[in-house]
Image (cartoon, rainbow, N blue to C red; front, top):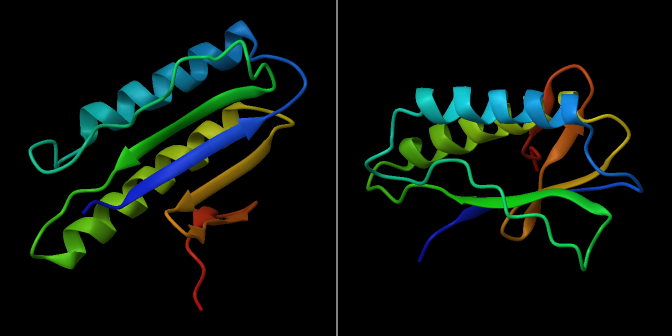
Length: 117
């Protein structure tokens, strides 16, 4: 059984061309630098769904399963860093990021992180 990070951004207007280019560059950079390609998935974004026009960004990424739990944590923190950079490219969105049943927490200074409790 796998564990995945899920992410959604909702707002009343679609991504601008500039936002799309910035987000694509961030994703390409993180995918190129992902060290566990043989164990986990690269960052995945769902295709835009015209039936849900306010969902401007959404996807999920399965974390690697390993006997070493630190591999999974490393991948989680890596993809949360990617999501932090993406969120900073998209203005005025309502975000929801979660690891299965646990919501990630947004901090304006440090970005996405998992709750400490």
